[in-house]
Length: 294
Image (cartoon, rainbow, N blue to C red; front, side, top):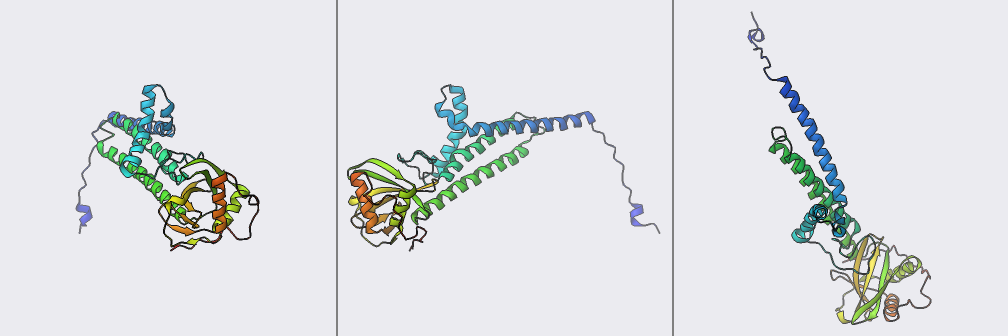
C-alpha cells in the first residue's frame, strides 16, 4: 500500500528572476546602509558640538549646528519645562543657564546627550530619504525612527529622574556639602564666597549639629540666602533665619539649626569674614548624622 507521503507530488519551481537585479539590490542595500551609518555618525559628532552655534558668526553653519540644540531646548524648556534659574554665584559644571541647575548629571543628559541623539536621528533620517525607495521603504524608516525616538525619550526620562532625585536629596540635606555664603545688606546681596576644605568641614559640623525638622512661623524678611554645593554635582538653594535659628529649603521645608551655625552665618553676612577662631577648627560631632524627616 502506497503511503500518503509517496502520493504527494511536490512541484518543481524554477527561479525565473534576474540575478543581475538581485545583486544590484543587495549592493544598493549595503551601500545605502553604509551611507546611513556615516550620516548618523556625522550627526552624532555635529550634535556633540551643537552648542558652539552661539559663537559661530557664519550663518549657514550656525543654522545647521543650532537645529538639534534648539529642538532639545524646545522639548525641555517649552514643552516639558525645567527648574532652570539664574545662579550667578556658580561657575562650576552647572552653568547659570543650565536646564537643571540642581544637578550637573541631569544637565549633561539634557544639554549634551539628548542633543547628540536628536542630531544623529536627523542626519540618519536624511540618509534614509535620499536612498532607494524600493529598498529603504517607509516601513523600514518607521522602525529606524522608532528606535531613535525610544532612545531620545529614555534619555529625557533619565534627565528628569536624575534631577528629581537631586531635588529630593537637597530637600533632605543629604550629603556632605560645601558652602556658598553671601555678604550684603538685607536689601540685596552684594557679594558671595565659596567655602571648601577645612572651613566647609567646620561649617558642616555646625550645620548638622542639632539639625531637625522645625515647626515655626516663617519670617521671610529676616531670612538670608545660602547655597550648598554637594560634591560639585548638585546645588541646593536655601534661606536661613539667623534670629529664629531655622533653615528653609526651596520647597518650603523647615529645619531647626544650631545657634552656633546661625551666629556664624549672620557674622559672615554682616562683615564678609568668618568669626575669629572658627576657621579650621574641627568639632567632635559627625557630619554623617542622618537628618530626621517628617
